[in-house]
Length: 124
Image (cartoon, rainbow, N blue to C red):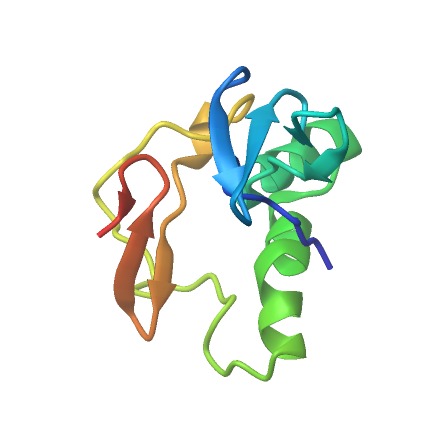
């Protein structure tokens, strides 16, 4: 199962300053407190997916299983984490893909078939 402990800095460019739990963090290769202590990851799931396919060598199907299907099943969510026509996506609206995999398109976050977040524009 693929997970990420992404913080409020997830997906933000290196050097960005933001806050977590009221404390300032700076995004570098991860999120760090001002004293240099690791505060958490800045890894987004689309980047995890891209790394699993491009660096680890998983197939698209296997990466989808570990990033979506397995977590959904572990949480008892029926019909989620499934790649199927008309499920939680918006066919016909190509988006640039994650780093290193522009062919994959951009994921969206959906809950009960309602779009709740766009990784490029944020919450909808």
